[in-house]
Length: 385
Image (cartoon, rainbow, N blue to C red; front, side, top):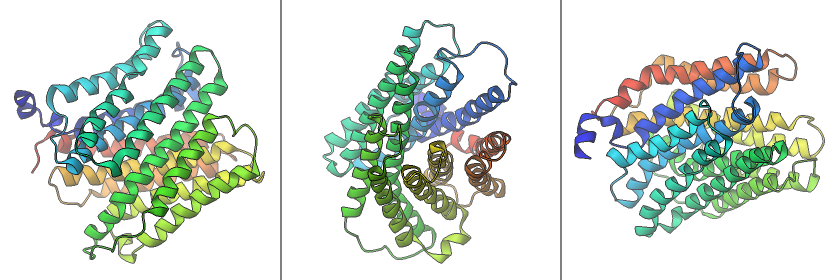
């Protein structure tokens, strides 16, 4: 293990390989999806069709890679235990990579499905071993959310095996809101810390944990509502749940706001991306009220603006901090933050009026993560300064 990490800093901490893999996959997966949508990608499709592949791979391929990279780095800090590195880290990465490549290989459906299952349970075991061993009960909800995501993936794959598009959709949408729940937990911890640190503000006094717990619970309930198929038609009573989620996110944004953050790209990028969680929740309120006809606009507000935006801003900040670099991203990376925000606006506001909206959004998304790869690959491959 020492030999591997001394030769390859890439495998010294979880954020290095998984941030690179996740960002690279973000570019490849969305480019493939967009090219196929516009008829520029002839040839055989993955098992179950391209829509099945896209639905599965964005939450369970892209998002889980970034989640793994962040938590494999954060949990050692929380517990004081050594993080996964060397060959065990390489092994976990290969499990993730095998699941991605399986869609491209001429495998029977059973083999394809089998290769998708192990990653999330293995990640939960690695994290749970340290969190439970250190008695960090405040972080146990993270394990719960990852376990629920594994259940959503199983639901999605079962729907694929049955050729049940509705069951696939329910599993994927539930997983997206679980990712939002996880980001609510992680964001609630790190974003105010980043703001205080980035602006040299005094540490804010501790606030009541009740709003955070209520936000986590309501987000998990939202995911359960999708898994149960309650989104098959607008239900005004369910809109109340999403109104609560939106209000709690908005309360956080109000508490975190500092005029100085607009001068710091690593802060306003996080802040504006988090605001998309409010947009997504309120869009669901409008859909359940019968005002907004397309639920997919709420879904992509969450997926592109919220999850995509938070991931890009977070990995840019974490990669600099954990490699000992100055917290000053390159100007092109700052442009990447803006491109991803515009990608979200294009996906939500332009698509209902133009067939080119999806293409514009995909191009901007790929450009944003491509900029990250251009500037951060060397940083993640080199030793800490």
